[in-house]
Length: 353
Image (cartoon, rainbow, N blue to C red; front, side, top):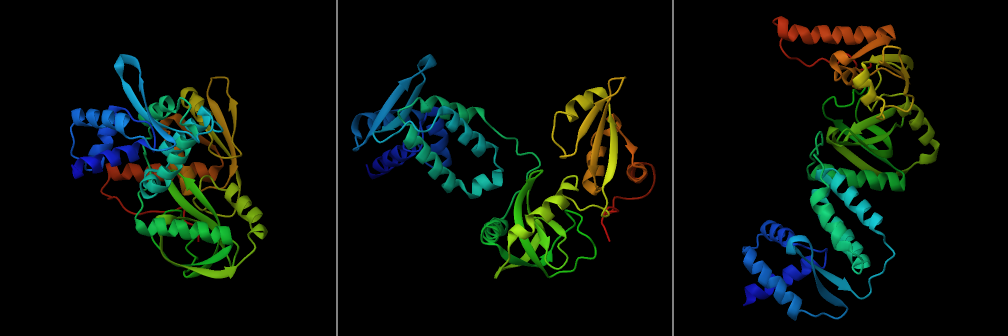
């Protein structure tokens, strides 16, 4: 009996979070290590509907298409201050968030979900929440999984930015964002922004001594220290924005120079590329043959050349000459891996001095 009572209480607790169908409650039971059959879950839900009557709460059952039942709790203090658009917004943000953050912050998300449900329980919440649970998914392609250290680092970064405190970066791993070879650690760092880019969370800020922009993926930072040394972030935001705006993506430019860049795309690829955001300076001109010219004003870095490669024969650099030669040389190096005896090797020719 004790096992049954415990199970009923757990099911009711799950109902207080959001509406459920038998499929949802069955999946929840399996993930919660509750060994119970589907038939028993039906009986449990029916018993909860008939016997559990807490003050201010009422279990409601809806029957939809093909006799599909939905169970939910209505709260007497529910308000209609939140719209169905708001509900959809919450589930879009939750389901499209990086998987590693969703897993690490699951309890926090459940709290928000429960609060949202309590506010909207008298509305047709069950239709939207159930559809969103089943119909909104992310592939999580290109995302970076994080360990406990990175999650703690993220909290420390948020704290430092909110309180305008300096960081000490002691040790950095691998060449993720093409940091200049002249940078020597440890350094004093002014954290200014958390930036999500291509499936990876980055810390953006300035090296205190040189006021040079540094962008570091969380997993690059191996050893660091928070400090109580304050700085006025408002003095450095504009500097950071200018430097960041001169980059294509987040990797460091090969040199401190902005180029007028022209890349031609085939018609079909150009139709795709021009409908996406890549850089704030992007402009597109259609050619007589239907192809597109993309115009950019930014520096040259590894990310730009790698991005050009992904379009294969559907893209061609027209200017500047230095970018055209870089692409040609990197293609030649790649071809040698297949036609010669040269093996795969690390080669970041884009890293600034």
